[in-house]
Image 1 (tube, rainbow, N blue to C red):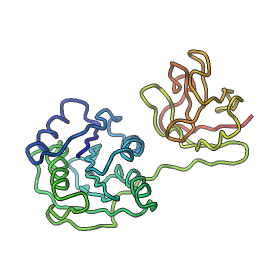
Image 2 (image 1 turned 135 degrees about the vertical axis):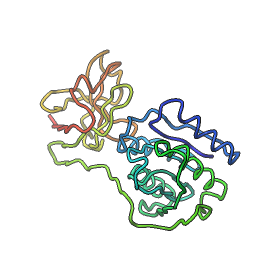
Image 3 (image 1 turned 90 degrees about the horizontal axis):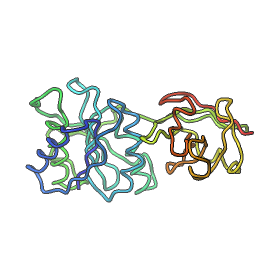
Image 4 (image 1 turned 180 degrees about the vertical axis):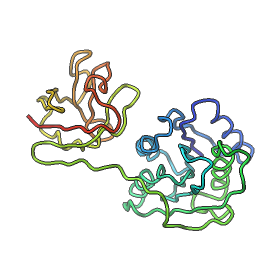
Amino acid sequence: MITLSSDFGSPYPAAMKGVICQATDARIEDIAHDFPRQDVRAAAFWLTQTLPYFPPAVHCVVVDPGVGTDRDAIVVRAGDHALVGPDNGVLLPVARELAETENDAPDAFEVFTWAYDDPASTTFHGRDVFAPAAAAVHDTGVDTVETLSEIDPTEDYADLRFPAATVDGDGATGEVLVVDDFGNAVTNIPGEVLAGQFGGVVSVDGVEAPVHRAYAAVDKSQRLVTVGSHGNVELAVNRGRGDEAFGVSTGDTVTISLC
């Protein structure tokens, strides 16, 4: 299996699929092609929420603000999975997730760079560099990447780690990592902060909001604070947009105070 993820929208992913289909008979699965444009961190977060649920596969990820520059192209081997994409950090958080899931060791992954010929386009490496590389990795098996020319292991790669929240006995301060299509503002504050608070009230940047396990526990259009499927504190509205109701957007600082 080869999975595809990008911020391309349509129709660019179709060209990547065409390249892969000419090179291999791998099954192709789309993860998403509507990641926030050029937002490497948001894409990295959503990959951690999706790829660990897949069986071993080659995952081709192209969110690449530096396309056409001298940034490297990399393959990351994490357990029985391989990740192909630009060297801008987008692959590293999910590589740690996959390595921890399969080996109980988040640092048990390997990063390789390889030399690629001048592509047909300097603006579409998804089609000209990463799609053919994903096909090559697939056909050699996800535990072998030697088919790519001049491939070498490296420890010099762009890393990306999500910031940690500051937690104390009175609450926590963190930031909004992403806002999903429903308007739920996903923070980096661990859900454990809300332990014992369900059914009660907390303060979000000075504004009180109820804490519940389900969106529908409050009336339509009412705010709530909950713990999402990702395990982090989430600012939400029942059948509405939490980002608008709480006045936050990606990257904003959020303080949760226990009442």
